[in-house]
Image 1: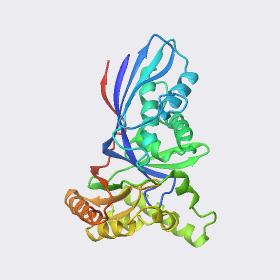
Image 2 (image 1 turned 60 degrees about the vertical axis):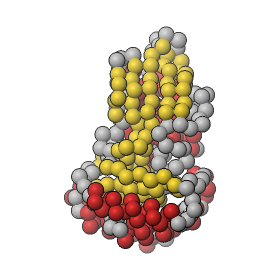
Image 3 (image 1 turned 90 degrees about the vertical axis):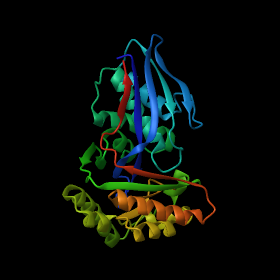
Length: 309
């Protein structure tokens, strides 16, 4: 293979109760990336559209990943990368993770697919660390594996693919405000009462059980975050109003996507999703803040090949 064009999906991480350990891929929002072999060795980024990102491969998430992979698996050719960002960095939808995960997938294809999805996740985490400061796996693993994922362990890295109930749908709103990842990390509590920890991990267990059993009531009851959401929601204007509107319109639950400012809602079925979309939109139109909205199925495939030769 000399050329490949891919779609790398946006992702929702944390999923309320699963801070840094749960994530899922979005079906219709993401980045389009191309990878092509060249005679000149090394990695070059030749085009970036849709966002202002560095062309320096040592500072770009995709470039960092590609360099690490070629160091691990030396070849007698180089690779050029183009990136079209389908959504804004800093949205809380895994923007750097889409680039990092997409780079791992695309470079692996040109190398002849020597690396497993777990290894691709480890490479993609280097891109996350370079751009966000932390080698977090929830977003990148969701993009690479597709569907829902559980990061069961970081040492050693262990990713578990979870089933996706067929009627599960996503509605999300991205208010056009900035929430810096550092600020979202700084507000996190340093200590957690045991009672709160027990409640939180019980909800993680309930959510996973609900995914396996197609139990939408259990999923709904488990989409509760009593540790992170209460402190982070203060960074997102009108969060409580959006969540209230979503749930009153029939959403199973709602919460913060990643570190925000995107707010996600999970719904059962297209009709409920339409009502939730409408309710959230009407609520936020009254705030005077610009926003973008998403309605989507869950992406169960992960990164998709669009062209190759």
